[in-house]
Image 1: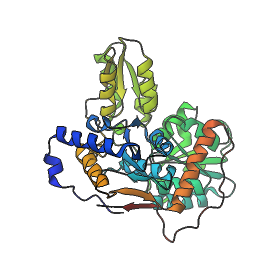
Image 2 (image 1 turned 180 degrees about the vertical axis):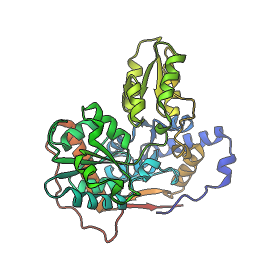
Image 3 (image 1 turned 180 degrees about the horizontal axis):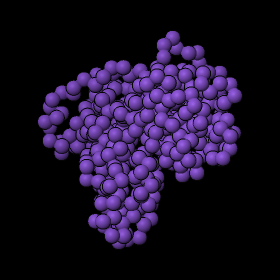
Image 4 (image 1 turned 45 degrees about the vertical axis):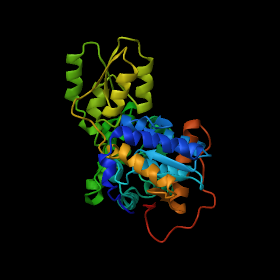
Length: 398
């Protein structure tokens, strides 16, 4: 993987109004050949040029539907651009404006560590226990491919419960533990979802990938139904239970809504929890005059404030809960990318090699099948495996 080289300094010193005018002109010139995707957490100076705004999977699916677009600029982070490349057609080129826009959560589960964990857990569990992997959308293409190869599925924060029900084959909390789920990379989404499904915390353990056997004894693994990866979102980890208490004291009658990537204690104190999409739709449907404290990334909260001035909306904590890696994609990098495209150069193309793309696509399709209540897709004529592990290949055109 080739990392981002500094863009020319004049992009950083040019006034924002000049950069914005240049972006608008290039976008008009490229027309239907271009689609710009903007994640909910992206800053407003970039969102103003987005053709579609949404969460990562929604944006990837929307990109795949834009079949006329030759260039897909993903204003998000690297795992999102990977998913877009997996789902879009071979004629489409997915571009990440800044290759340094990563995701600390996704990086906490490297595929080599996941494979090591799988081998260790397979030895401990033995043939009498079915082990199934589930990965959150916020993971690398290599991890999605690992899940696809081992019969598992991807999940989002919206459909996580459905995927877990499928993975457990409908088992309830009192059923004998004959199936176990290894869930990565976010322990909090796994714990919060499983708990809301009625499973006790005692049936959940955390796999610390830095420790031998994940820091767990064979007995702890045997008693667990959910093996949760020791990973987290650096943004949502900042919200604490005391922030909920402070919001209730400061805003009488407030409704606290948080993302399920927040820790269990925060979710338990909140009134509601759900995906970015659910948060947006819930506040949109709320009556005028209602008061909301929102536990998610600050750019999305600020956008909700501006969109619904008839409601009192505040961020749950003023600790600057900002996705700093998403913030690396700014107007300067967007202008640089478009300058390159109109000059005939494709910079920062994200390209997932065919073997990884095939199995990652299958894991994503299984998620869609399960969510829709359809038979789960099985592999058909997969491509041969490459000689080395991993899956991300970045073609840097400039």
